[in-house]
Image (tube, rainbow, N blue to C red):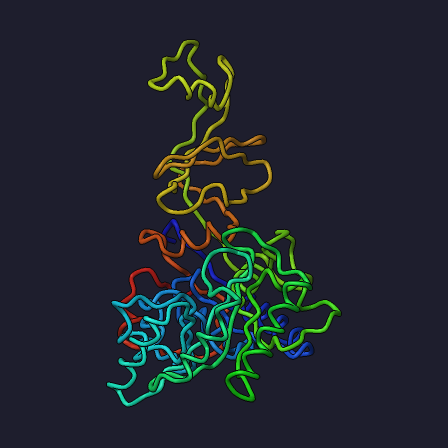
Length: 373
């Protein structure tokens, strides 16, 4: 079979989604399944919806359009603040969008007015991660402005944690965010439909015993796809961590002796010697590199060590026996490695664990990176 490839087990993705949906349901929290790490792959998105996610979240309009072309008709939210250059596409393809700029919201309203529609707005609140968000002291005024703009409707508010600055969503921060939601409800109307408290990093708090206040939604990607909690990296109890497997091919396997004297173009490279002089090592070269994925985010099989990587080579050393040319190496990926590998044009996606009927349209049939087994 073609390499490199990612084997995607949809049954494990459905299972992970279903487990998280059921556990959070008892806390009064719904799940928005985030598909950005898989580039809006329609079959993976559908597996998340089959597992009970109420809607999908995407960061790129091109991925939303891919989902729509494949026949996904359910609600999709753009979870990154829209670009002014894409407001027409956002209104056309997304049911709602997460926003931080009133100028963008005004342009979304204009685009919605042209199509005689109303676009739903979720305002992002800055809660300490220092990435996207409106400062808490300004959120009420912005919410009032949104309510006065025809063509858009205030659907809710959202927050983000543990992305740029690594701020952990503890009980105090979540209580503050819930209070902000209550204050906006009091200022702008009797009810805010969506109070999206964060992402997969929020799971320890969300599944704990403390009150959840107004928070009724989480946007989950990493937890569903990889079965881990992002802050600690620990496996979430009962979830699969191997729904995705990256498989690459060995293109060289040799015993090499390091030369006794080596000159480097950069003196700093001398400190990065992979093996000491005069030491024989069994090395294999794998046909994958930094251009394909985040090499540092890969977990290799037991007994295999990564010695280094360049743009399109990964050099490994084996303890027991070296791999033969043409053999395959199975690798597990963290979130960073998964995102880059799913976007790499030379890595195909092989779907397994598909039990529900799927009727792709011509766009998905023509995708050269998609294979079914």
